Image (cartoon, rainbow, N blue to C red; front, top):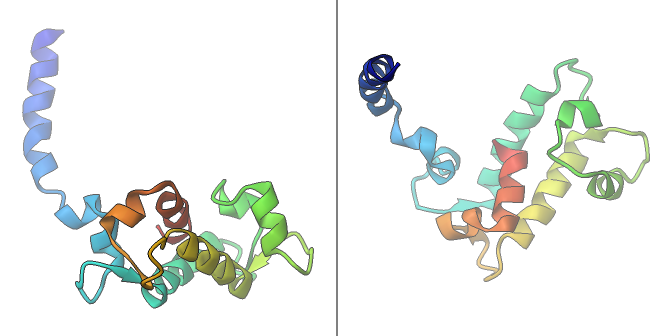
Length: 129
């Protein structure tokens, strides 16, 4: 058993090196201008792309099932002013903006790696990646 584990680990280690660094860093994935921060427009662009990916039935809305736990029930109700049981893209992006502002305690309009690693930043990332 130990020999088998050793062989598997020796095969896996070189493969781990092939994974690009960007895959491990949310900031690098969300920062197309490479300035070391994510601004609201970059966050909304990522959120819009994720919205389209999550909208598997292509009806322009996300229901609780499509959101897959990214939004709790209370937050969903607040983000759904028309009470139709779904979030359209504008409602989703409004929620992204709320979470972005919560993750930006210094109010500089950008999020760095430390802010993205905070609880509020992690909540935002659920809507972006």
